[in-house]
Amino acid sequence: MDSREFYEELTKRFGELIREHDLLNEKVEIRGRILKPGEAIGSPKRGDFPLLKGKEKLMEAEFRGAKGQAFTDMPGDFSGTLSEIVSRPLETNYDRAVLVSSINAVCNYLGLSRNHVHCKDEAPEQCAGELAAAIKKEFGAPRIAFVGYQPAMVERLAGSFSIRVIDLAEDNIGTVKYGVTIEDGRKDITELLNWCHLILATGSTVVNGSIANFLIGKPVIFYGTTIAGPAALLGLRRFCPRGEQ
Image (cartoon, rainbow, N blue to C red):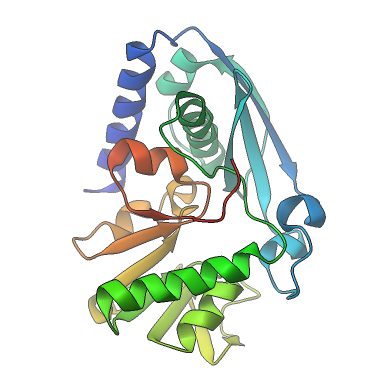
């Protein structure tokens, strides 16, 4: 499945959902903003989460009191009907964030997905421990391609598995984090994907347009809040045990 086919299928499934529930003409309000550190992730002991450094920007949709979020590098506001949202072209990260945050809000409202708000304080550390245990139980000792830099997960996984990490943030690329050199996710990653047994990818790939790169027939688990609704609609595997509703 290429990128175009992925978003066509996602939009189709969402369109069918809102038609089924007679929601086409219902409005969604979306706000784009930069999260304050405490609001984003509380007060964890470690200080190297991207959220604490003000790098993460949020699109938050509200539908009938239910919220849906999407992390993106192109935040902005939007107000319109669900019918307008499924009809809009997906040309930029902003466009995809509008769609994804709306899907998350509607799926939240309908009870189709859960854990839509980023966990706080020490919950990310607990999440990382649960992830490492789950991988060991199901996969044994796989070679892991980790997409996106989430420090608690990278530290915990690097201590137990063979792991390579790619990221898009320029100030991370080339640095060594917990004994792992962060590779450039903007370059050809074919060799990395051939090397790994398991892909762990940030759910934000559904907004930046790269998600189809990781749907290659190998086991893939998406982590985080951004992909909550799309994962439910498309049957993708998601790991986010500590997110808030």
